[in-house]
Length: 173
Length: 183
Image 1 (cartoon, rainbow over the protein chains, first blue to last red):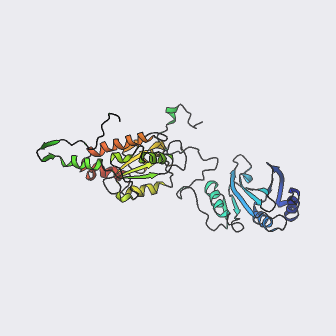
Image 2 (tube, one colour):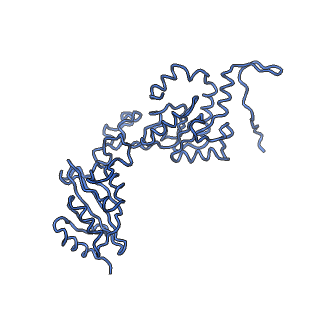
Image 3 (cartoon, each protein chain N blue to C red):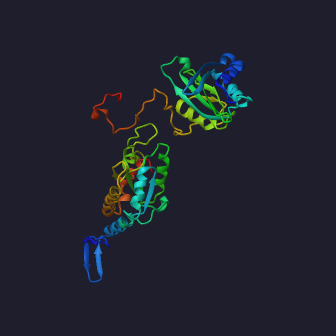
């Protein structure tokens, strides 16, 4: 018997009550929000539960919403996959702007190690308990987090593209 | 067969020639020897490298210009060909490769990315390799055709042929390297 989304939802509601919320079906994938401080517990439960069996972490990435409420400006999105029943879920955790910190899941899924490093590299989200949280793709000397929306798209250091000669305004629109 | 004549020898430099002797300037002879035996070091990171593979292969055959052997050791190369996008993370590696080359050394920057960063006007890409190492010849194009790369090599040969043997110990050259902070 295939794993129904209602089963997943009720099972999570029973165990975590208000820590899981906002269940909805987006692009055929059950999507829900988890309180940031509960993510490790929820993910361990999803992996180890005998009926849920979400044994694979497909992806982990960051998001930035600079116009949102300061308590929900950063987000970490987890995609999990149950290989037995071929069911996928998407989990979102929202983090405050001034201190985007969340527990690492690299202790639950080893594959999260590099993905968390990448998310730190581009968004500056701190993963508490990560064994080696340092930049992975960008150079170590970099001080900014380039995927944050306030980061300028073009390299500010270039000297050969003077906007005056291209008839553009100063903000390069 | 076409009527075009295949030139198998380089033209003699300026000098006096007689029965069994030739007298000319040493720098001309050294320049001629250097220009016609440039050992290339291909530093290929993307599509310009593919064009260089065609340049190297039988159809365009860079060996006709005295660059028969690709040297993949910087210590035995004269001419560094940088082909492709250089990410900022790659910059120290390129610089180290350049520093390992023995004098005299020349650099050709092939393609828009190596020359200026090209379309990659972004935080992760070096905006032209001349930010970190001195460049002798720039080959434009995205990517340039093999003919353009050959033209770049021939332009470099002109530079090498006319270079003074004392240039590398001149104060101007020391100053140039100092401006890149290369010892």
